[in-house]
Amino acid sequence: MAPPGGSRPGWSRRAQYGLFFSFIAAVAGLVIGLVLLALSLVAPKSYASVRGVALDGTAPVTSSLRAVTATIGGVFTGAGNYWDAAHQNAQLKRERELMLQRIIEAKAISQENGELKAALQLREHSRSPIATGRIVGSSFSSPRRYAIFSAGTADGVRVGMPVRTAKGLIGRVIDSGAISSRVLLISDRASIIPAKILRGGQPVISQGRGDGTIDLRPLEVGHNPFKRGDIVITSGTGGLYPPLVPIARVVRLDDDGAIARPLADPGSSSFALVEHPYEPAAVAEEAGGVADTQ
Amino acid sequence: MVRAALANRRPIGQGPVTGAQYVPAVTVLFACLLTALPIVSTSGWYPDFGFLVLIAWRLLRADAWPAWWAAPLGLFNDLVTGHPVGLSIAVWTATMLLLDLTDRRTMWRGYWLEWALAAVLLLANESAEWRVAQVMGASLPYLTVVPPLLISILSFPIVAWFISRIDRWRLGR
Image: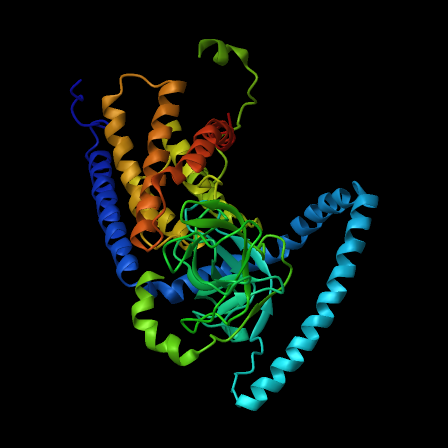
């Protein structure tokens, strides 16, 4: 059906003009929006300061409420732990025995390793964390996977630094405000991490799938090197992420790779560390090219 | 209408609350701020609350705010939720203009038609987010928009009901 003639608010010229100018303003708003969007796609760094301020504005609310949700979540998981406790206890004791043997082996190996490195006079950067904080929130309505981290430029956090917990890698910083920063999680599609399988040391590429899991692809095409339960660690290639940080555990195989679940769950990990990029020189060199994809 | 007027339940002298015309915009801002809740989601299937509230208001009444207010509201949403700046500005203003055109085409309005319109708009919003993510280097298969889309379509009636309650409160009805 053809629409009836334009909507008239009445005979008042003022009302008619008001409606018309509101329409013009809306079209202008649309155009401005498209221009800003194009700008943020082409040059993502251009709004860094504004976004940092907005981040600082909301982060205190998020951080203070985080304690409440952590408590509530803790009650439920705590209650779950009592379920089947005797069986769990026996299992944990068995695992502990095995672990003790492994620890002794590992100590011996690391001692030997230290001696060998001293003999070769390898130099390594000392890795001290820049800042400690909590993962307090996340993006929850977009295909991108970001988390809000409770430390910012005031603590020395800069864009591009890797974030990890004791359990494994979390991601890297992409926006930083004064007291909080935004982290690109390893489960985001745009975060591509050079990695290797802990079992055989075979190089693989880890890429997020946007839904909390990770795609793993071997660098050498041919056969599928993964097995269920394999652990994947960073290889240190590229210079951003430090080597030997656990990333994920394989849960399912597909035709030429595997799907894995991150070992460090940003939702339940209490503290996270921000570290220096592993090889700052290499990262700085690449920064021009990397900036476009962030 | 006649019955409601005869019922005489309303106390005399009760009118709109002060600043009633800004209430819709403020509820949208609050809905955007829901992302500041300390929920760490690994799947990203939560609905886009700001957009849901925006279309719920706009479908309820055409004069909730002048159409161009969608641009600053969208800017706020972009900054708070971490979308690339400009995405919500463009999508939200386009939504306002689109619904202005739809208002002239539709003969009547009803529950199902509003839900269908909302579903189409939510699909457009999710697709825009997906496309922008793809341009920014996170190219996911298109099917990944389905779960969040279903969740937001199903949560639209709840949001719309909530908004209609707020509307009655702000007008003092």
